[in-house]
Amino acid sequence: MHTRLIINPTSGPADKPDLSTEIVEALHNQGIEAELCTTAPDEDGERLAAEAAKAGAELVIVAGGDGTIEAVARGLMHTQTVLGIIPMGTRNNIAASLNIPNDLSQAIQTLVEGVRGRFDMGKANNHYFVEVVGVGLEATLFPCGDEVKEGIKKNYWAAFKSIFSGIQTFLQFKQHRLVLRLDGIRMRRLRILQVNICNSPRYGVQFALAPDAKMNDGKLDVIYIDNPSKWDHLCHFFKAMRGERLPHERLNTHRAAKIEIKSYPPLEVHADGQYLGVTPITVEVIPDALLICVPTPELLLKFVDANNSYGLTEQADGISTDRPSISV
Image (cartoon, rainbow, N blue to C red; front, top):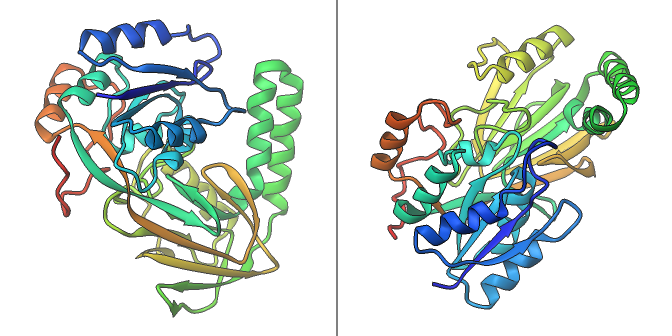
């Protein structure tokens, strides 16, 4: 079987050792001989994946974090090449949403004994995404978050200044008037701080913002609080970080295949952490965009019995059974 392995050795904590050799050997022990390619955040995992698919690869395995997985996924859209995932990042939200374990041996076992299923992606204007689109406060704060991460690695004083800047931005951010259209139906005018459009149940620092989101239901989950206070937003934020349900009298959730957003004044937009500009924006689901290897229910139970702490979603709620997976 023609297989390409794309590894980002810089994924995960800075002090993590390079596992490339260990991964290649572990795959070899399971009968998988893969052509090894390395990538990095500033290189093109999408191109490496697309080249492999064009060359007839049956399987492309990506070993990296969410950003690397997203890039490789874009390269495999609408192909018959299967995406295999070995999580190596800090958060591993995509793997968790698909119930793929963080443990290396179990992730490789999934490649051997799992099933191939069709899963959706999303499109925000002309950008394809796997996890989420954020409109409003979250997108405005993203540069501060990136600066904090870089500052922690290099300069704690710079990180502190970025945190202070983020607090200032949060306190100064005002509600915006917004018009939301779902599958062509215009909703009433809203006053919001933020709207999220989710393909996966988890994103960011393991936010469980849309715990019922399915990556293979042909829909995107839309979440917002109408006319929120800053306190409402903070409570919403911390509950999502803890993976809790988000009960709120003004919390609105919808499912739609196409979402159109206009706001006054314009709001900033990100998709999977990448800045996309400002509203207006149109977000659409791309059904059945990817073939991904995921655990069978029986294999998932075996993993849970073996080790309950490797980061799966608690109720395996990242995979819907509404549409059958394609067997290997």
